[in-house]
Length: 181
Image (cartoon, rainbow, N blue to C red; front, side, top):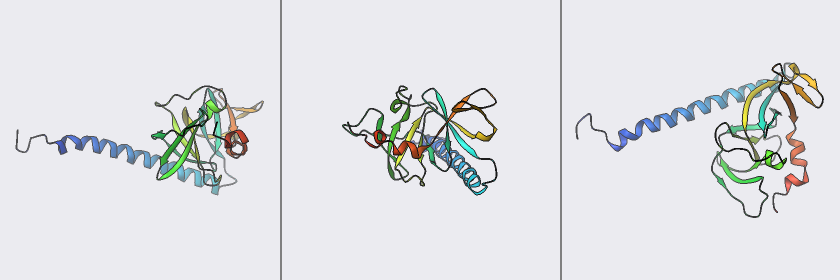
């Protein structure tokens, strides 16, 4: 078939490119909005402090926005031989090689399912550690000061318990620093 209605390989691939480009544009917009919120949270020290809510294993954690970097879908990983099973390998995230850790597995809470809601969160530049965590789910921004103390955790209005996770303490752990077996 030829003429204006003919489907050429270029025409058939066009909707796929537009869909992928649309997803990338939506992801970029979401990341820009999150970055704006993070910058506003840093600038307004007297204002409410937002934290990033994530699921690691079966537990919910709060990450300080100054310690969290980008949130991205799990990129392809390159395995690194002779490393612990919780060290998933290296990923290229925006041109940077980043070590990816399954923190649930590191904590002995089982493997994080790859796919679905799973995301990778890079460590923020302030930490100075080229690493990322695989998390089961990102819940978005949470206001810890509106939560009620519940032992070592905080409980939100929906009855969910949250634990603060300080990434500077994670990177200071000798075991975390030695990924080799």
